[in-house]
Length: 87
Image 1 (spheres, rainbow, N blue to C red):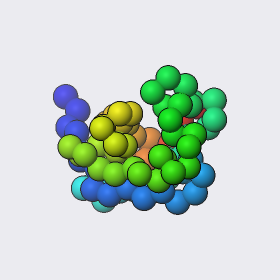
Image 2: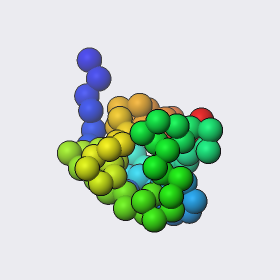
Image 3: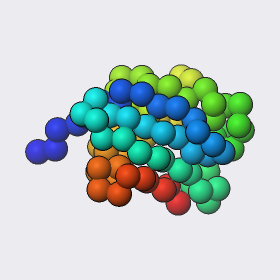
């Protein structure tokens, strides 16, 4: 059984790029490729909207919690590679 670790903080650090830190100290860069910006993620192409990122209920999210990123998969990638690229 996988134990979920809450996201502690998130900061936009560049175009379509975030720096995320988890409560257990795992941290790294999360980057969106433009090819990933479909469906609910389409809104993230707007730099002003992207900059509104925050933490809600232990996850990286944007206003109205839509969209949000599953912390379990993000944690795996950041712990292993120090980065996660969403393609």
